[in-house]
Structures are given as C-alpha cells and as structure tokens.
Length: 439
Image 1: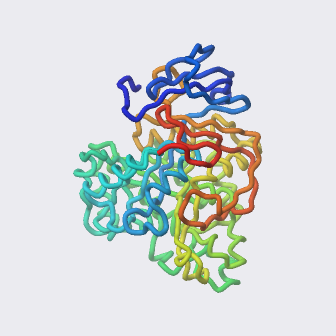
Image 2: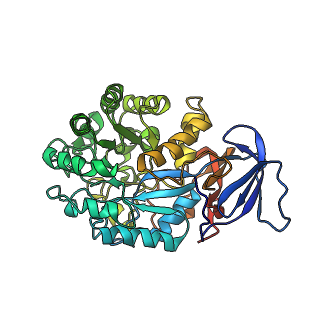
Image 3: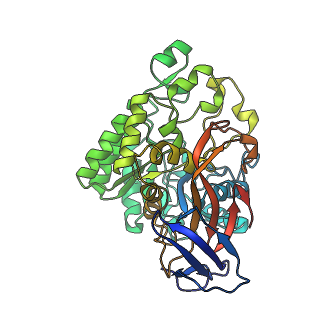
C-alpha cells in the first residue's frame, strides 16, 4: 500500500465506472492514490473522466516485452514501446535483456530503468540476463543487478534457452535469497536449432521448411520443473505453446513446485495453418502450433494452470522482417492488441469472466515479478495504476495506427470486441483511445 506522495503522481475523478465488473461508482484519485470510492464530492476544476459504460480494472502488467533499446532503436525505443504499452492498457512492462549490449550488468539495468522513467508513460522494469552475453556459459552479475537501483527480480536469456542444466541450477541457487525468478525460453537447440522456423508437422513438410517440434519445448520444461524442485527456487516458463508443456506444468503445480507460466495472445489465437502463405509476419518463436495445442492453452489459461497473459511484443524493422519466411526475423507486435484479442477469444466466448482475465493480465503477473505497486485491488489507499476498458466496443486493428516504430503486426485488418479506453499511471492519464496523452 502506498502512502507517500509520488512526485510523478496526479489527481483526477473517474465517474460512473463499473469497478472490476462489479457495481458502478465514482473514484477519486489524489496524489496518485485512490482516495475515495462511491459518491464523491470533488473540486469542479479537477480532471475528470466520464466512464459511463466502461469498466475500471487494475492496470495491465506485461512480463515479456522487447523494447530493443539499446542497440536496435530502428525497430523500437523505450519511449515508442512505452507508448504502445500505454495504448494497450499496460501500466508496467518488463523489458527483456536481449538488447545490444545485453542487460547483464547493474549499469545496463539502470540504463533501462532511467530511460523508462524519462519516457514517463509506464513503469519499465528491466529483466536481467541469466548469463553473460546470453552465451549460456558464465553467470551474469545476478546479485549486483538484484541489489541495484533497478532491483531486478526477473532474469531471462529470452531468445535463447539456458541449455546447460548445471548453469541453470547454479543460477536458481544464486537467486533464491533474492526471491527472484528465472523466465526460461524453453527450446532445446539440439531438437529445434536456429534454422527451425515453424511447427514441425504436415505443413512444414509440405512447405519444405525446417520444423520446430513441440517436444523441444516440453523437455526443457520438464527439466526445469525438476531443477525448481531440487533448488526450491522459482522458475517461470515463457510463451508456453504446447499441450505437453501444459500437462507438465499442471503436474508440477500439483506437487507444490514453484513454477509459473505465461501464454501469449498469438499462441492462443493464431494457428500454424497461417504459415501456408509464407507470410513472415507469422514467423514467431516458439512457432504457432496446431489447433489441439491452442485448445490446451485456452483451457489452461481458463483453469489457472497458465498464470498470466504476456505479449512477447517483438518489434522488427522492415529490412529484418520482410524476407523469405525462413530468413525473416522472428516475432510480432502485441502490446496494443493484447487485451482485445484475449477478451474476444476468452471472455466473449464465456470461457473466462472479465475479472478473471484482469487477474491474468494484472495481479498475477505483478505477483510473479514482485511489483508491489501494480496489480493491486481497486481500493482506498492503493496506487492508482488503472485501466478503463469498453467490453462492448468492436474495433479493427490497423497496423499503421500503431505507436510502435515497427509494423510486423499479425492482427492487421482483424476485428475484436473489447477496447482500452484510458490508461492511468499513478493518477496520470497516459493514453486515451490508442493515443498517448502524457509523457
């Protein structure tokens, strides 16, 4: 609970909102904190948002964002990625470490932190690399990053798997006293090497493309489950894509092992059949999977086996993405469309309630990342990191309307029910209807 005044905090009145899919009311925010809920008598000159027909939720938290800075500012910067995040309803994003240079030192982590604060749109939380240079051999400055101003609590070599079991074990042991978590990119390179570019199956065979079998993911998940049990440390599985991984995670949770997992909107909603057209926008790692895997992911998100929705927002400059499928860069945009995609797929179909989806996109990822000021209940005394959504609005995605510098958007031209109306960070409105208004 926050009580001290944040110098970046604001004050406003939100009128007529439904609070977390419950009763309607007014919410007064003063100095970045929820001050009153109910029938509020506020000063006439206070900034106001008419929220009639809208639902107020805790601001979304993304466990998996690629902001590309430093090193690839032609694809994204921390400022442009923050703008995309704010437009998508996020109040905090975790910036992955596979930048150039890699975020494997305390100084590099603090650089990301400071650039995020300068952008001023969302809380940008640096993820630290597990190994130096993501090489998988020597541990990075884990303790220094954890003790730095950035207070790194999530570590990942994402883009690469921590393949060496001994290195993974030592990292888990080292990080345990910091209550930190390793987010693993589960991909055994001996089963799915660098040339693998789509799901291994009938389609890859017909198209003549190198396949990425699901077992290359699940064998690493199974190994890391055992390492988590052995060390008593926390493991998080990034971008789960297969039914086999889901079953391992479900079993591990039943055993009380400290494992959590995320799923992306694109693995929930897009299938491997889209690869038939050789459109590189659909090249992603792990690859899009068949319908049976998609169904397993949807069921696991609904029942809580998969803890969180994470975007794996991966912007690429056109000269890296617009190639033949096998040679194109992997990844797709996700921040601005995440809520709409998952709301349309899971809430509109009755598989989850809006409150349950909010938990998977806000409270649970904040818990995993140990972000004390995010994902909190909408209650008096709590930080005003909030998002207003319109569950009934239907909108069509247009890639050229994005706040991102990149355009590798797989959702272009698709329509979804559910839209973000406004994002609020510590009482300051940072975006409205897809447009940045603060920073």
